Image (cartoon, rainbow, N blue to C red):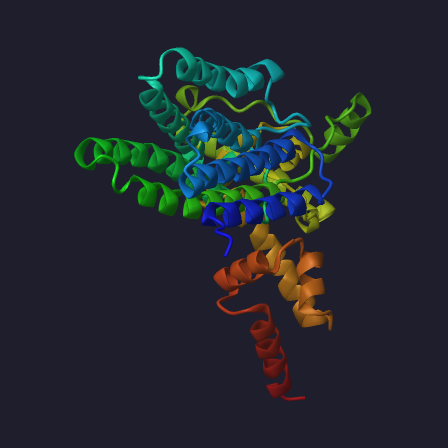
Length: 369
């Protein structure tokens, strides 16, 4: 019977995941970065299978170099969701510095000075893991290019990836101790268990984050400036918190929220399944962070919760006033996935959409004529 190491199965699943993601035909740098990240996970899984399944030690240098690419690639992929614009705010020079410098340094060390390779790779994983945790400090609103319908899922994928990078560095430390204490007796089992589970989960998380990213929109042309001015009359630039008292800051926040509520009521932007924080902020001619902070302070919630609240209200209206199927109601209200729709609806209404419709109709039937 042919022996097929489990890492090869994981690699196959990741390849199928990448193919499925590629067939979305979505453009944008974040999409290419997430595809490259999943491909790197799959390649690493193949190398692990060759190394520990067939004892082919010649692949070890490639495995180490690829590991030094995965960490910055994961950071850049999620960092692209934290910027707006067709290129997601990532300057090509800065991007290629992250993608080329760590692998080149590690490859040079592997070739000429192998002894510090392990600590360097551990430092890379710890550093980029910490950078992802720092990116996540502002919550889901930090991912301004992620669809508001799936911002929470993208945020969880970000947290998981950061934890996995840090965890991988800690596993490398455990392996080094195992090599010193037992001659590496437990190392194959540690690597197999950690990598099989982690690589597949990381690939799934990357695919989920990319699926929830909104397609890039071109920057507004000059002709769009008039439309923006008409939709959103300019407000005086709000003063910085250290220059304004609390009352004036709240007044500025309330003015922003009044414009936002008016825009939502008039344009019904919440029904756009591709709506993200960046697009919403551009409609209001505001920085994304300024809009996020205003919603956080006034409503004590994230932007995604604010928008999804409007979507749930619209879904309730459609469920109560029409006979549209629940799936159609979901799309009409601005939700893209059934899982997000059911979660948000249950969070706000305390029951599923189908239960809410049945309860509403039962109540109407019980009312006297």
